[in-house]
Length: 323
Ligand SMILES: NC(=O)c1ccc[n+]([C@@H]2O[C@H](COP(=O)([O-])OP(=O)(O)OC[C@H]3O[C@@H](n4cnc5c(N)ncnc54)[C@H](OP(=O)(O)O)[C@@H]3O)[C@@H](O)[C@H]2O)c1
Image: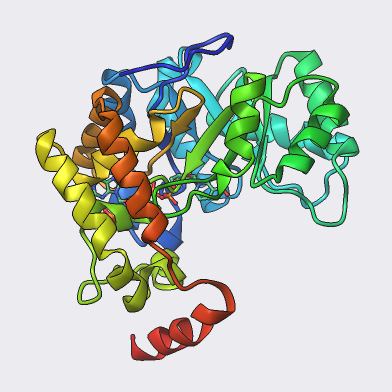
């Protein structure tokens, strides 16, 4: 495992574990996953040196936090625990109360990273950051982070907090490189960190799916990325991932992760449906891509232009009726 080079109280692994899947119906992994596989995934992650564990109060309506906390058990103190608040009522006393509730579901004395899950479109961050500041003062929260924030709003959040907002957790993978426009450069210039979510494009970059074999769970069945047309458009990128993977005796998913975390300010938090996936994802931290391989994948990803937004709507409606 490799670790981030930043001045945090605990070390942060370059490959973390995302736990939206834990106890969330929308991933469709069922009760035995939530009841036993999830715990086995966390225990194995610990053995492999993973320290970054990401959850949120909204995942499974608190179930993900409970499952993760129980699985970490005695290791809670030694990992870098990250959770998120959904800022529906972003006033300071509510932020404080929600932070306490998350810590209690996790069974943790401290949240190493407390993130605002997404910007509230109607309320600016002054009040939420007042709550975050109070949580930092009491020692319940160490670092503050945001998620899905534009650069302008990230900087405004730092001004409101009066200190660094260490991380911005955003969708970032070879299938979606928008954070490179301004968020990654900001992190590089100011000692901040990008936490890449959906780093495998929710499984697309594993090469496991194509237009004849589409995932059926609600998260991906309702995602434009998995429309047959987009799966076809992704074929060249996946082919390139396969070829680079072959040279490293690795898998396309591992190469997709290795590509992302090659940047020193980027960490990735893939979710996993099995222990074997977790093992493979953790091992990706040790793969070194050559400059040529890195560039090749970057240019293949530039050629991948999925149908999105309004243009994808027709396809999504059709795929819903064809299911
Ligand atoms: N802040 C936010 O708004 C936000 C939004 C989304 C996610 N997140 C966080 O980011 C985490 C990861 O994102 P994500 O779950 O959306 O997408 P992801 O990590 O790109 O994809 C996860 C899925 O990919 C497949 N997979 C994982 N490892 C694999 C491997 N080695 N080989 C083949 N397939 C593999 C698994 O699905 P199958 O086996 O079923 O194919 C797994 O459930 C979440 O758990 C959550 O913590 C945050």
